Length: 89
Image 1 (cartoon, one colour):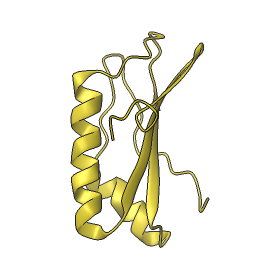
Image 2 (tube, rainbow, N blue to C red; image 1 turned 180 degrees about the vertical axis):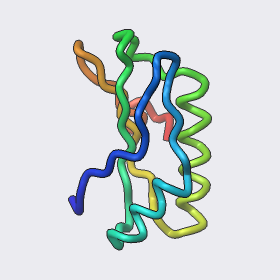
Image 3 (tube, rainbow, N blue to C red; image 1 turned 90 degrees about the horizontal axis):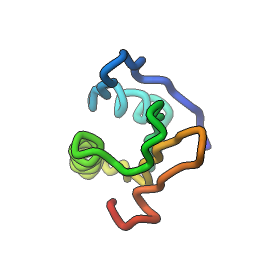
Image 4 (cartoon, helix red, strand yellow; image 1 turned 120 degrees about the horizontal axis):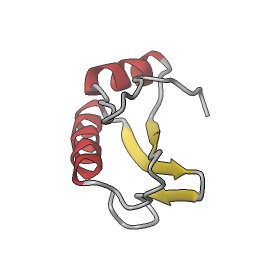
């Protein structure tokens, strides 16, 4: 692990992750892979359509930069959901 980088702060209705900011941090760290993670304060462990959309956009951007998106984790007080474990990535 090269580091943990906070790239956005959520509001009441959600958060957005800017692909440029995520991969700028990855490039600066000379990373070859990244793991995305965010929380669902609602406790819902099922990825939303927006979660899947963001993950796919990050995966495509990573392909262009030769930086693999290894996983995307959704974390709640009850546990976590791994896109990799669920074959969503």
